[in-house]
Length: 49
Image 1: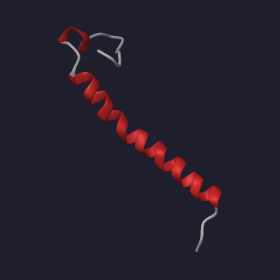
Image 2: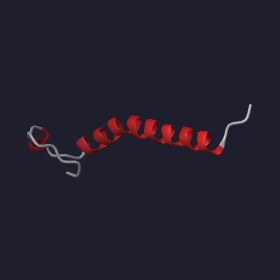
Image 3: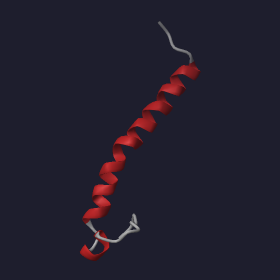
Image 4: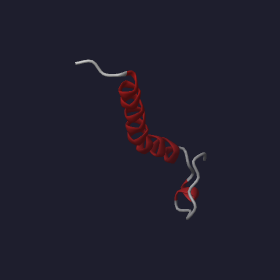
């Protein structure tokens, strides 16, 4: 069974969205690893320490 080009593109978009969803906790973990202790307890988090 062959898929159309638009179905294949939709599959790639869904896969990319899923990968971003999975990568978010790892990005947060790496960002938090380099923050100083004072910034870890702040109420407004930042991405770049």
